[in-house]
Amino acid sequence: MNSRLPLLVCFAAAFACAPVRATTASTAATRTAFLQLIARPPVPLAPALQPPAEKDGLVHLAFTYAADADQRVPAVLLQSASPAASGRRPVVISLHGTGGHKEGQIKLLTQFASAGFIGVAIDGRYHGARAKTPKGTGDYTAAILRAYRADEPHEHPFYYDTVRDVMRLIDYLVTRDDVDPARIGLIGFSKGGTEAYLAAAADPRIAATVACIGVQSFRWALDHDAWQSRISTIQAAVDAAAQDAGVTTVDAAFIRRFYDRTNPGLVDRFDGPAMLPLIAPRPFLAINGDTDPRTPVPGLELCATAARAAYRAAGAEENFTLTIQPKTGHKVNPESLLAAREWLVRRLQP
Image (cartoon, rainbow, N blue to C red; front, top):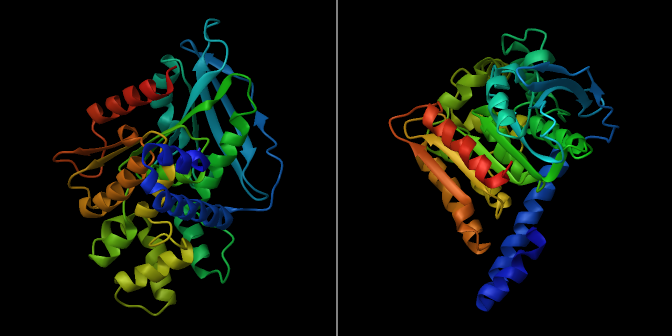
């Protein structure tokens, strides 16, 4: 899709071809670098499906698949049990936030399945069935700390590795004869919202994306001393890393070093303003709160400005939408969630 962008823009405005070509090359280089960072030695998907169960007119299917040699991803899939719901259908993948799990997405998946979608959720890295203590985040923060301490980390459990898990999930979904590979959507919340836009930037197979309370500029937060709320979600890992480094007062400079070790590029090459343009021209909806300390509005606006420029260059301005919920912190209001579902229905047409 991106490979046709310069030609389309040339027809629209010949004088714009050179800068658009440069922008497209930069976009491709960013995606390639990110994919190289999260790459692992290839292994067979080896999907393992449990016997399906029917409940309230929906089929529930639990399964696992291999993300890499060390990680199998537990997932759940919901779809209509009606014989009329045959043929290839669109999919919506839902990603939970910090401390969540795939079962927490069942209500939303039920709504999508009842509307004609196939709904899928996975457990994020070291969450749910992938944690020894599923009700806490101890395994998650311990894995992040291991990545910080490693000279050459083989894991990036803070955001990046779940992107790989999503891409491997899509590898499986497109093998199913009930999935329309051209209509795969993604919605994520908080941590899952960040993972959603990173995954959409990395994988053009994702046709439409909703990122809820996750779009942000990590660099802006560091530059303006607004990083504390975001870091609080992994505070134990940061505190232990600071102790390792002999740091008594954690400041923006230390958080930058922490990000550079656990998530290389998160504050520059793979920050929100760099990654959102990679999604254009595919439909993208961001939902944020106007008082959310984890996604400060000025940093969010930097992301939106970069995205709007990319969508404008692609002649697809109508495909980018930013919804800022008034008088709202780090949450998704019921009316916003309803709007997100309706938006995905319009875009993916079950």
